[in-house]
Length: 291
Image (cartoon, rainbow, N blue to C red; front, top):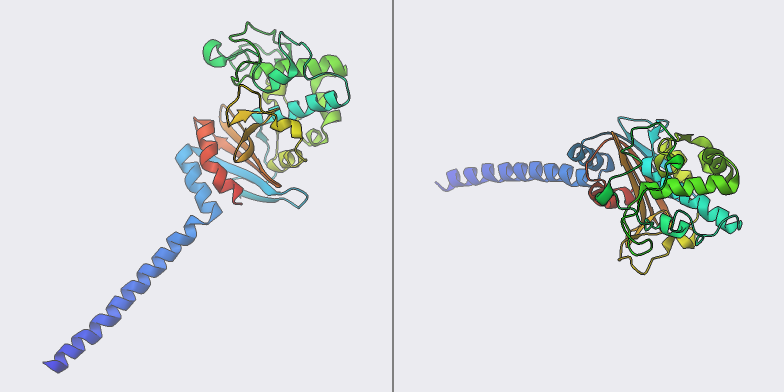
């Protein structure tokens, strides 16, 4: 009996050890997958109905890297509202050259208010005169519509404000907006431009091309927080929060994200529409900044 008992225990122990090894191996696979950027991105994309992505990332003043899923680094994507930081950079450059003032009167408000999304237009109340129009006229030619609130008293995301900024750039530079952009912002020379969304969302290109624009040193003016704004707010062209600078673009079947934290810059361009662009950005932020 003692001999028989010894044989049973001797068989049981190797079996348990084998099972433990299998479980440990399986756990290692799962654990490593949690830190695999491609796998995490695939899960994120599946959850939000996104079918491809091209990403450029890296620290400023270093050679950026790329990561793609069902795409390639040379693929052209629309930037949509990632165009707004470009427009804001143009306005600030013209202000530096004393061609315009950030506080001059334009369309019943000021360039500063327009960049802060505080020009007086609230698309939640009156609709979006840019994306909802049925004409083919340029964004910069849309007449300023009636306002919904007193300029400079609160923020409400506004495409029309950036179209008005583009019209101001044209008047002061004496050039079509696209030509002015290519002179003032060298990175746009490798981008494509569509005047329908214009200064509010008309640029497109590769993730790497936008990375080179976004990786420029941050103008301190961008961080300016209006007195009426909360902890997270629109500065001059960018969304400012504890996580750094960001912006997203979302229209039709494409979604774009840019993130800046310290010297690190990430640009992610997707096919597909997540529905809630801000919610998707906040979910993607830690994953993208970890690249």
